[in-house]
Image 1 (tube, each protein chain N blue to C red):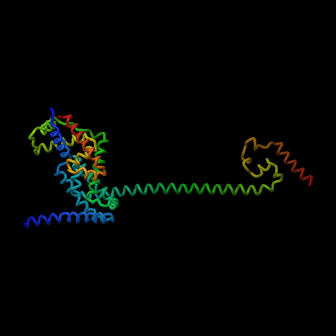
Image 2: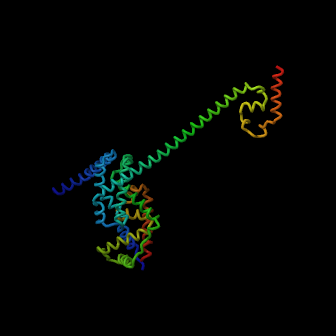
Image 3: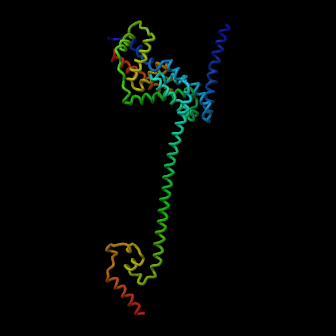
Length: 209
Length: 142
C-alpha cells in the first residue's frame, strides 16, 4: 500500500522535475547568451551524452562522431539568440533539431564526395543476412559486430533522406509526429519518405539474398 | 530463395537500427577528456573567422566609399574650375578690337578653336592680314 502510494508520488513528481530541468536549461541558455561561459559548459555537460548517442546512430567512425559533436555545440553556441524566438519548444528538442540537421548535412555531403566509395559486402556478411532470415535465428555478440559493420555498408547505399528517416524511426524509435516536428516536415511527408526508405532498403537487401 | 515480407521487414528493422557506433564508443567519445576544451577552441576559431569576415566586408565597403568620395570631389572641383576659367575668359573677350568678328573672337577667347586644328577653326593668312589692315585702317581714320 505504502509502496503503491510512493510510486504514485514519484509519478506525480517526475513531470515536475522534468519541467524544472527544462526551466534550468532555459536559464542556462539565457545566461550563456549573455556571455556566461560556465552556463554554456553546464549545457554541454548536461547534453553531450545524448547528442553523442544521437550522432553515433548515423556514423560508424568515432572520430567523425566527435567532429560532428563539436560542430553541434559550436552551432548551438552561435544560435542561442535564435532559441529565444522559438517559443513552446524545449531546449532539449531544439538541441536535438540542431544535432539531427548537422547529421543530415554531413550525410548529404558524404553522398556528394566521390571518395566515399561504397564498401563491398563479404560472403560472410551475406551468409549472416541469410541466417537472420531463418526461423529461430538469434543474435550473439559476434553477429552484433557483423551486423553493425554490415548495416553501415547497406545503409551507405541509401539516399541521405532515406537513411535519416529509417534511423530516426528504427534506431531512435521516434514516432512519425516526432520526426515531423524535428525535421520541420509534414507528417504525410515523413510517412511517404519512411515507406520509400523501407522499400529502398529491401531492394538493397534483395541484391544480396 | 523467396522470403516472406514479415522476415524481410524484420531484417530491415535490424539493419536500420544496427548502424553507427557502439554504446561503448559513444561513452568513450562523450566522456573524453578536454572535449569541452576542444569545443571552446572551435567556438573561438569560429568567432575569429566571423570577425575577420565581418571586418573584411566592412573594410571593403569603407575603402570603396572613400574612393567614391575622392572621385566625386575631384570631378566637382574640376567642373568648378573649368566653369570659372570659361567665365573669366568670356568676360575679358570685350577688350579685343573687332570682337564681333566670329573667327577672331574664337581665337581671342581661347575657346575650343584655340586648340583645334579642324578646317572650321582654321584661319587663313589672308584673313589674318585683312584683320591687321582693318585695324591699322581704323587707326588711320582716327
